[in-house]
Length: 327
Image (cartoon, rainbow, N blue to C red; front, side, top):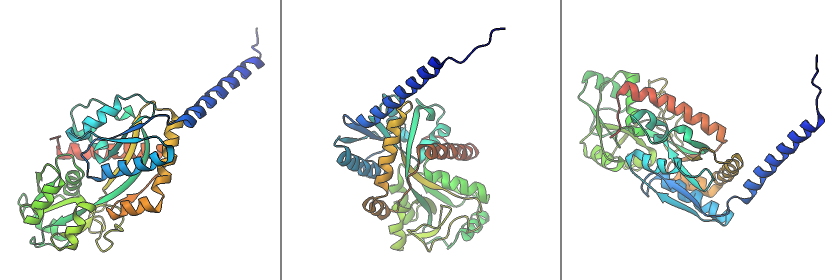
């Protein structure tokens, strides 16, 4: 019987190949970026998605000496801009700002021109909770009051949202599911008109991002009932969480991050991750984000990948149970 004997040259060849791969990856990271980077925002200018892109873009431009061009491509619930990046070359020169809708859209739309697997997560950049707010004329001062009133008048109370599938829409659908209440959905085309009608008394309650409603709460135009996050918000410490107000298991965070097309070299992803993490830790950026009611996060690409998957699973169930559809 022939016995195969180890051949030293094989090990040498393998080692040489690995050295070449490592050297190539190092060279890619060292040379990157060698030309301008396009950072796509699938929303109009003005919101925090845009703020994140422009803040990070300016800092990277200053650090690397290559322009980071912010490209706003709004429309179709963020799917237009997202599709552009999904089809872009995976070379690190086209990036995408993603948020809550990124993980929700696969369940909300019957078909999408892309898949979550078409992207390489880079970093979870920031989060902000939603506030559950009510028109002051509504005779409630707490979550328990809202639940009691809704159960005494099923189908009579209504809530506003920025549209089907938005974070404030699905926050309330999760709330309805956990509390067994019947509160009617009134979708708007954006948060601003929804908040305007809530202040005016055309609708009763809504969840919305802290930056969008906190000023109205402080002015007495809206009443804050609870915050959607697991812990109380640093921006509204006197407002209890929904969970501690009698709805255990309720937790919603609106989040923002950056991804690249799938197949982007790991060395480039790692370099982008390290640089954005460094940016998020600067006092200037923390202060800028905190002023808007948003907290910086940071972390590894692997952590962000796991986070997106957990969000996809969580909200797919809420979408299915609520019957939510895209506008």
